[in-house]
Amino acid sequence: MAHTKVLLVDDEKEFASALAERLQLRNYDVQAAANALEALGIVHSFRPDVVLLDLRIPGMDGIETLKAIKKFDSTIEVIMLTGHGDVQSVENGMKNGAFEYIMKPVDISELTVKINKAWQKKQVSR
Amino acid sequence: MDAQYENELRNLQMRFIGKIIAGFTHEIKNYIAIINESTGLIGDMMKVGKSVENDLPAYLDIIHSIEDHIEKTNGHFRYLNRFAHRMDSPLSSFHINESLEELIALLKRFANQKRIVFKQDYDTDKPTVYSNPAILQLIIFTFLEQNIMELEQESTITLQTTVTDQSVRVTIIPNGKRIEGSSVSIPSELLDIVIKELGGNISQDREKETIILLPLRPL
Image 1 (cartoon, rainbow over the protein chains, first blue to last red):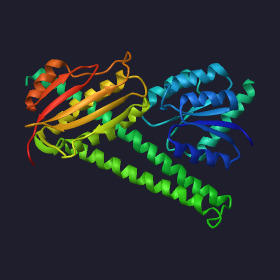
Image 2 (image 1 turned 60 degrees about the vertical axis):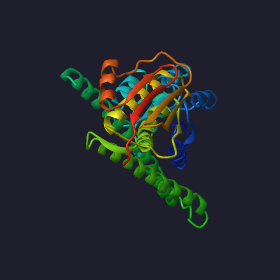
Image 3 (image 1 turned 45 degrees about the horizontal axis):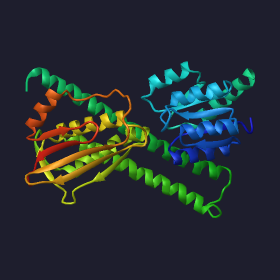
Image 4 (image 1 turned 45 degrees about the vertical axis):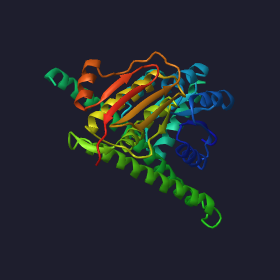
């Protein structure tokens, strides 16, 4: 599973950098973006396998960002990062093609299982 | 105040408290998430054999981040606690600047979503008003929320306090283009009744500024 390309989108820079480093230590190839615009730029250049997308990012709404990613490449799998109160956004995200969601604070083992499953789904759908 | 207005006011207050708690819990959850990842990262670094001697700056940076976010969490709890105690008595003397700071801290999350920045221009004399702090916060919250909803991204909202003869003037000044947006406002008749009960006065120009005048009383 080495070198699965992961894009982490979260405006909390310290959260993003710590989580990115933890994933890198687990052999994922990780890039991070702090807002929707930056994320879409990296999606084009980096071509991630999996995007970890915080639903409450500044700029474009998280769901709109999800739609834009899927429109660019429907095989990119998106895992939503969310707080407990975002049930409606999660449902909306799943309807719009998100692969999974994970609650913050993140359990790293649970997250890597979900990333690996998303990567496997992407290989099948290619 | 008649029962219908009373009921309407209670509903607005419930909505206001719900919004504040939602913003608060979201913010705290973010701080906990950062602390969680930071402690996890320290554990991961140790597991892969990064020694404290060789990687001391990296370890210290992470520890500093943890301390910083524990302090932020503590500060946020302080704001919420003070906010909750605003409802202890219907009328009291309180520092208006502190009350505004509390609202800004608890509303920051919503403003950040649109990259809207709050600017503070407070009277340095720390004016004290005699009013109903919970109702006053509801009124100011409603105007701030209205502006957040109706302003374009990256706008600013300035909160200004100034002392005049026998009153304190709170001015909310939006700076940015207006967009289509639905927001909740206090019906004007109800607002008139409430502000009269507070012994104050409101003048509002949606495009420009909202001015709230409140009676000044020493502590």
